[in-house]
Length: 165
Image (cartoon, rainbow, N blue to C red):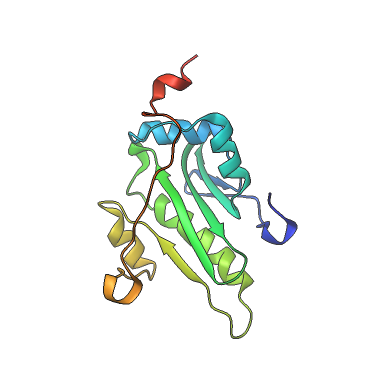
């Protein structure tokens, strides 16, 4: 659950015809995921992920959600930016960078003298150049360890068919 120290203002701003807010519905988040070929996440689980985020930045064109990014932060020295997703028709137009810049501005506003926050992000295909332009550096295993993951599920396969009504 979010607490007041993690709220970001202003909650809504407009740039170049795109409106940026700090909230998104799970339906809209799943719609953006599907637009780039990612599987849909169970609505209850996705809502919990959104609610548990330290910050959400969503991009809208008119009233349609076209992009999003989430900040997962321990409130101290470790942060992870996840779900940086922009609908295909809007990719490579600066929206990805704007989503991340807004998250980084939020984190910078929380820094105190002598504090530091390690911010991790996972780059997909064409995103590396965007992230490097924002100051991110590629991690090397000798310095940061090898990124690894595991996907836990109580089902053999998760598919979009589960969510069709």
